[in-house]
Structures are given as C-alpha cells and as structure tokens.
Length: 550
Image (tube, rainbow, N blue to C red):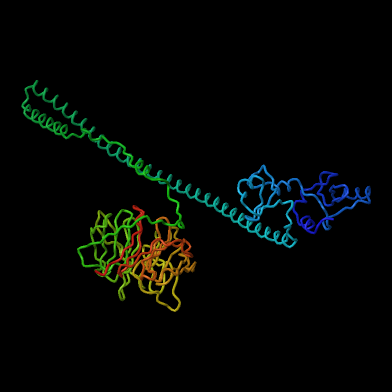
C-alpha cells in the first residue's frame, strides 16, 4: 500500500496530466491498475474492469503507487550543475543535493553526506502542502513580474511608435520649411535676375540709341563736308559731345563683373554639426557630478545681494543683483561684461529665449515683469508687463508665462494676456519669502514645480491640480528648483548634520514624488545670500550662485 506522502504527491501533482491512456494512447489517464501496472482513461477503464474484475484499480482520490513520468524523473534526478550526472547524495553541511561529481569537487571534506535512497529525512504531508503554497505564491509573483514586464515592453513599443511619429512630424515640418526656404531662395534668385534683366535691357537700349545717334551724326558730318555747308561746326561739336557721352558710358564699368554671383549653401555646415533631429530626454537619469570649480563674480559695483542666476545658451550668464537693482552680464569665463538698471525690488528671473530673460520686479503698488535681451555682449531693455498682483517667482515654457505671487499662481501669455489663475493658497496663506527661483516648468510644459521653505509642490499647468507634494528629511530649507535641458529636476537647499549647516543639491524624479539622489552636500562656508540654480548646457555643468558676507 502506498504511503500518505505518495498519495499527496499523486493528488497534488501536475505531472499526472502528462500520462496518456496506455490502451487508446490519446485520452488523459485517470486510473491506475496495481496488477497490470498500467494507466487508463475513463472509457478504457470500463473495458478493463469488465475483463479483469479482480484487479485493484485506483483513481486520484485514492492511495496508489502510480509511477512518475519519465520526464518528471529526468527533472528530479538530473544534477543542475552537471547535466550528465544524476543526483545520488545529500550534503547536510551545505543543505545541497549532489551528484558524484559534486561530491568529488566540493564536498570531500563534508562530514554529513548521505545517499538520497537511504535518507530517512522524508518531508511530511504538511511540508509538501507548505511547499505547494510557497510555489503558488512564487508563481503568482513571477506572473505579476512577467505581466509588468510585458506591460513595460508594450509601453516601450508604444513609446517608440510615438517617438517615430514625432520624428516623422519633425521631418514633415522640416520638409515644409525646406520647401519654404527653397521657394524664398528661388524667389530671391528671380528678383535678382529680374533686376539684372531690367538693368541689362535699359543699358542695351541706351547702347543702341547711342549707336543710332552716333551713326546719324557721322553721316551728317560727311554730308556737310561734301557740300561745304556752314553747319560743319555744329555737326562736329555734336559728334564730339556724343563721343564723350559714349566714353563716359564705357568708363562706367557697368559690365565689369557686375553680374557675377554664386549660390552659397550655409545650411549644410549647420546641419552637419547636429547629432540628430532632436534629443531624447531622460528626466529620471541621475546626474553624476565629476568635479567642482569656483568663480568670483567681480563687478565695478559694491557687493551685490544676488537673488537669481540664468545661463543663456548663447554662452553668457546673467545674475540679478537685488541690492544694487542691476542685471549683470558675465562672459563664458564668468568675467563681468555689462549691466543694466532694473528698478524695484527684484525677486526672480527666467529664460525666455536663447538671448532673452524675464525679470520679476515688485514694490508696493507696482508689480511688473521686465524683459531684457543680450546683443553683441550688451544688455538691452525690452517690453514691460504691468500685473495686478505681486510678482515673486516666474517660469516660462514657449509662449506661456507662469507667475507666482505671494498667494497664488497665474498663467499668462508672453503678450501679457491672463489665461487663468491656476492655484491660490487656502485662506491666502503666505508661501514664505525666498531668495532663489521658486518655480520651474518641465520640458513638455504640463507640470510646474513650486517650492516654499519646506516642500516641493508639483502642479498641472493646465488646471493647477496638485499632482504631488514632496518633502525630504535631508533638506530642512528649500531654496531653489530648476529643470535641466535633459528634463532632470534639481532642488537646492540647506540641510543639517552634527557638524552644522550644509548646502545640498538633490535630484527628484520628474513626477516630483521621490528623491533619486543627493548630488552634493557641502559644509556652508558662512554664506547667507543664496542664488538659484542654473545649468550650463555648453559645459554640462550645474551653476550654483550665492553671495559671501564680505
């Protein structure tokens, strides 16, 4: 009679499904004859029972000694490390099943090695049931991982298709632009040819006229000479004047390289320097800092109280000096170049284009956004927007301005038109005074990041909905937030440890929900006036500005 353990294995085993009826060879075997040592399906077992009424037949609900399949035996007995060897031993010291090769290589010094066939350490039915439960649990987890992997793979395929569609759209736009450039260039050529054609036609007609008149005068002179007429003097003088006109025309050099021109293609040189139609953003790729350099922003003014900094893609850096009410221009080596007066209490600025910034100015009843641009390494003032509310933070995405007051967040167009109020603090709670840029927009323009002293808020730029709220135990004071050209979200602030105050930069995921890394954390060298973050896309470096007390 079979043991309880064998019955449990038989009842719970998936391997029985691999048995086929030995009579019909097709249907699943569900019965086992202890006398014939054969398995039968539902139909064939009836014929068997009619022929052999005294044989003992077992079904799945009964104890039996149903043999394991050959494939199952191969799986169970084959050594995982040595596929040609069978498992014969069990090492108590290592808790491993071993073949002869395993014993020879790794277990010669083990004290507890027994033959599996002689082992009396058989698991109980409870152990087998627990094992089955664990297998099911692991299989469920693996299935979830597989489903997640399949989902991620499908999302990746959809993202690739989306990217291909976007690239195709860019190509189509480029084709449209190339068509436009071609048409404008051809039109310029036609205008040029038309101008030349008109000049050539006019001068050709003038030449013909001179030739005709000169021929007539020449004939007149000959006729006067033959007839000895008193008009000889007049004829000669007119000929001289006409010859002088012809000489002046010939000396004008109208045809001397006048119509020499070539087509110069400067687009090839520009395109050859590009690595692609665009770039692929990886907002959650952790930035790795490789080194540090320090620069002193020296000017011809007294020490400034810097409140904001921006790097312009044209290769210059702008710093907002609140104390002196100045916007300062520095070159690629951070040497002072120029400044321009910005009247009012200065708070923040943001990049508008490759050479233009918008600056927040706020004092008493005057709330303004000033536009400034750089041209030939000089600063120039542009338009000024008048706002009906305070202006202490600003961010820009394409044609959209996001202006932060002390109590609310507003969406404007660059033209100054109000789109909507995106968010207002409950009970007009003050967001807190900060030195540094207090808001930033992600590259796709659908999220805006706002900071106060203690947290980072992520909001939708379409309706102001709170998407996430981030706090960090490492930062006790938030100062600035910045989005790099690669889409990474950086937060700058102060943290503390046993040694004192630290200046810390952390990277947050693009959802604004969790910290990805602490990029740097250094001891605060007695610096109190903080400047916001910026990113130098030319040198792939983070710019952190602040002012010393001296």
